[in-house]
Amino acid sequence: MKIIVSTYTQGIYQTDLTTGKFAAATLLANTSQPTYFNYSQDGVLFAANQSGKSGGISTFKLTQDQLLPCQDYLSFSPAPVHLTVDNAHHFLFASNYQGGFTTIYAFTAAGSLQQTDTFVNVGQGPLPQQNTSHVHFTCLTPDGHLLVLDLGTDCLFTFAVSANGHLQRLMATYHFRPGFGPRHLRFDPAGHCIYVLGELASAVAVLNYDSATGTFQQTQLVATLPVDWTGQNGGGAIHLAHNGHYLYVSNRGHNSLTVYRIDGFPQHRQLTTIQHVASRGDFPRDFCLSPNDDYLVVANQKSSRLTAFQIDATTGQLSATPESLGVPEPVCIKFISN
Image (tube, rainbow, N blue to C red; front, side, top):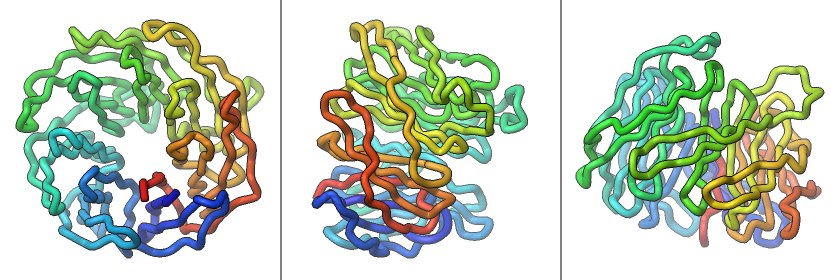
């Protein structure tokens, strides 16, 4: 099971966990501050890139054991913090925290990008971290609408998108409670609800989705932290088990992973907290689950270390393994099919 890791400082790395032990980390690309990456089914890897005052996206061709540079798309702007790939239509959606905007690109199998549209938001929230708009995440709904999360304004936007990558209309705006700070979300496999991580509130919101109108309604709000925790914390990442039965969240500050069991009917999901486990490192910025849901690997940014956990197939709970691997300031991590 090949794993690719991008870093906060310099470089994109590769390791492997096929035998249950980490292979030595190897450098795939010496690109500057690749704080997030994603890849397409036809082998194009898109990486955030910040070089001095210029920021944007760099593209690579992903081969068996190397990344071949294609092009840099940089301007006098910050690099995006999140990238979503639409393989069906060959679109890339880039979220820019600094500046509060989302950019849509059309991409080719050769790694070229062409901008098709941009959404810029304005506003603020009640907390110091919300002094302006901070678009942090985008994804597509199962029926093809674009969702945009703005951490700075506590908003979730639903857009209709045309076949050529243009924003046709704003269908709906959902307002989280002030100070929630929506960071990332995951769609339930049945497509009727989403799980949204509130970075600033250290909470997960469950929202039902109406595909006819693009609107959402919150049905549950659960904490990511134990009730006796009083220190600083920020939600890091949120991922679903591939079987859809368990949800996982990382806590930066508490330095832990929280595991939830998912119960209920597709139209009314409920989360039950079943475990808090230490991440075995400092500041778990991101993590990923293996394709078979047997391993979870954490990128602990401030301790520059990957840590591995086994996943119980029956309960979804995590057991720490002795495995760890040094990688400089890891911030984004994904399993890649060999």
